[in-house]
Length: 377
Image 1 (cartoon, helix red, strand yellow):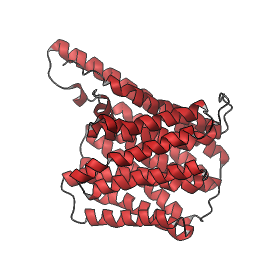
Image 2: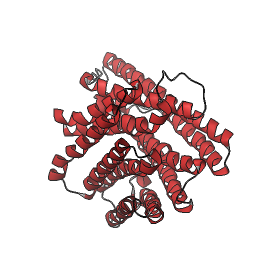
Image 3: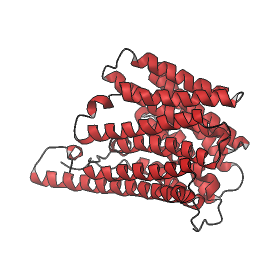
């Protein structure tokens, strides 16, 4: 079977997301204390915006633009990607934040036709996630410190991912309790975000309860409960989802137990339980699906991918364990291994793409008709 060509017109947008990820990882190493060149740019201060908006925001909005199909939908990833590049280049003034705010606004507007066609709980959850992202970005543009806005960014990612999981569970006939449980949990989470501005203790407790509720929802109602018993890609996705649920639940519990004013280690533990443990577990799970959808090229699932999954779990356990014990060496080496894990993920994905092309070419030569994306080694 002849391998499908890449959607070359989407390559610049995907490249901006990957460059943001690489720069965000470089910034992470600087924050961890490694002596590395920074090109005169204050990359450590841009670590959060690069990872949340430059990489994840661009990637998620690109995936949504592909689903919508209209050229105008690509404004969101183009703007956030350009904003991230401005941060990396050290462009003076508010150019980077302004572009990222405009990109998140464009992402909210991209949901208007979706809501008109399908006003369902999962679409509402995703659009509210986009609104939370925009609020966080706007407050960042105003000069608010990152710790004061980071839970709005969490809201973007948590609501987006959970909305997608609800949509998938709905297609497979969820329990009658799944939808009301999701609605209640989302209300707790969103109510906590809004209340946190006026009453941080009560608001952040509700945010933590919402994260715990979403973690429980994944365990009790997500289709991963059934696909865990299967092999290949379905099991791989389910394993990652369960890991993600664990880290999200742990983050929620820590947010409830810890004081409002977090110390350095408590802050690090909550942030990376969500942004690395939950979010990247979901990215690992869906990369073999997202990449073909966005780039128009198959990506074979391979058991090799479990290596970066195991590496993430172990390195994150070391880092967050160090946070909870107040151990700077464990935090340092756990964080360093987190970066190494993401590099491993990129390398494994590139290897999977290369193998998919090779298998497709071999299949064409041998006269076979199986799509390469179904082959697992």
